[in-house]
Image (cartoon, rainbow, N blue to C red; front, side, top):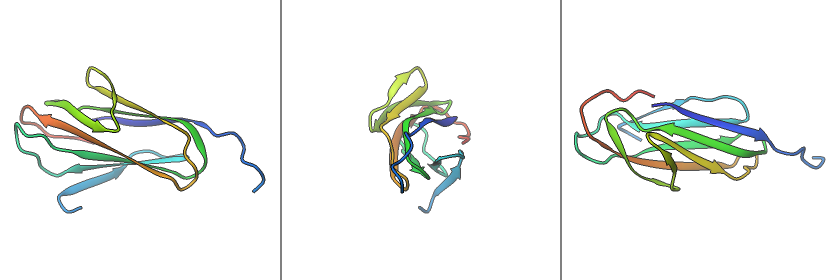
Length: 116
């Protein structure tokens, strides 16, 4: 599963869980962490989370993720824009230290290994 966060810098500011694995898969002014269950049952819906943290003020944050092979998209909060297995969310500007969480719920349609 591939996840990306892209952004445009903000205008210059005025003067001055158990059973889950997580990975920080970005750098720069936005940190994105993906937290996925270590196992899921075939035929059942499961959920994972993307957590986005701004290390500075940013605007125009675009988050994308790909539904894992062997799974089908069921829902997300907030609702994703979908294009086949590609999911995307356009986030408004984020202030330094602000955190946003996206929860994605696919269904495991066949056996396989989920990669980050």
